[in-house]
Length: 138
Image (cartoon, rainbow, N blue to C red; front, side, top):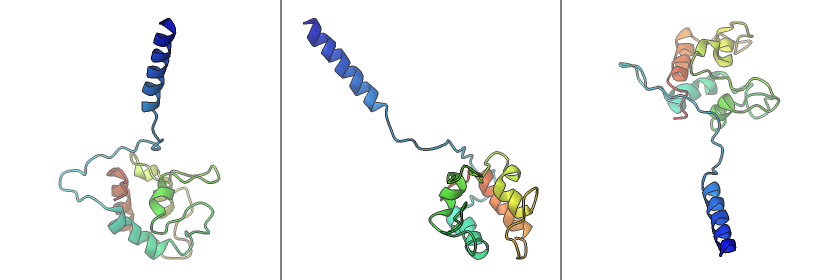
């Protein structure tokens, strides 16, 4: 009887343990709501078109660090780190300290895009606001 009870307890513990396992969903990204009066910035409609127009000439599938093509950009900005460098490029708490904004503004890092006109400040501000809104993949 003790043996049966012991097997039952071990089986129950195993079931409880396995129920707690789930796939790692990556780092927690804070997603505060937009400030009153602000419009929610959408990655697909507001951010990706900037990358398509100004960045994917260099930052495409063959770029060593960052692929900004549609379908790859958000993941690479948030998680991709193939060589132990840079990622994440986004800072949802302090966008001005993010690698992406520092490159776009040319602060402490080389300005992007190189060999082209800098992005308008309003465009960079929109990207920074997207980060403050939680850098959603929407």
